Image (cartoon, rainbow, N blue to C red; front, side, top):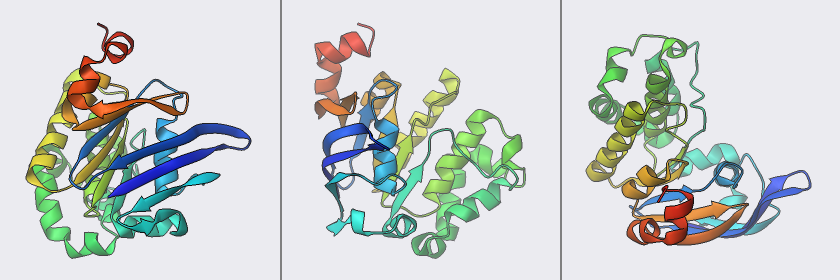
Amino acid sequence: MLEITQIVAGYSAVSVLKSISLTVNKGEFVAVVGPNGAGKSTLFKVISGTVQPSSGAIVFEGQNLLSVAPWQRAHLGIAHVPEGRQVFASMTVLENLEMGAYTKAGQRDWKRSLEQIYEWFPRIKEREKQLAGTLSGGEQQMVAIARGLASSPRLLMLDEPSMGLSPAIADFIFERLLDIRRETDLTILLVEQRVAEALQSADRGYVLETGSVVLEGTNEALQADDRVRRAYLGM
């Protein structure tokens, strides 16, 4: 579904991503993990189009993604849930979801998508008329994920969904992602610092360090790797 080949990208003269290559197959749950500054968020910005790479290629479902304008990529079925949630604070929860459903697929599937979202996140339904800015951090993260789902995406990209959340709420978020994966054919690409939870949830993973992929493999292989166990799993 998504093939990234030797992407080099950064800000001004500073290269953050150094010839990154990775693939995500249809229906997969793939995790990208690594420390702060590894380039994980920059990778997502390149895919969504807010950062332009200096070289490399990205193909999404057979189409050259770098030739597609950033605003058009959502219409191809790519939903980017950004780091830090970034909900529309002065809008209600329902209005936030409606903003996510602006794509053609989102408008077509709106009624069904909203029903599914409320099943996965009943707390959102309880607060649908409440201003998003007045919600707790965990509730705002649920809204951000739900807003991405409202676009009826084919690929859901989640950037640090557990950031700033209590362990209990973070666990709830990961459980819901697994439920969504089981109940749909949605492809998920996750960037996360909670390495143990990310690898347990995903089918495959990539480890980024200083802008390069240093390890890749199945979740079982990465969790068993001595380097990952020492550096990220506290073993």
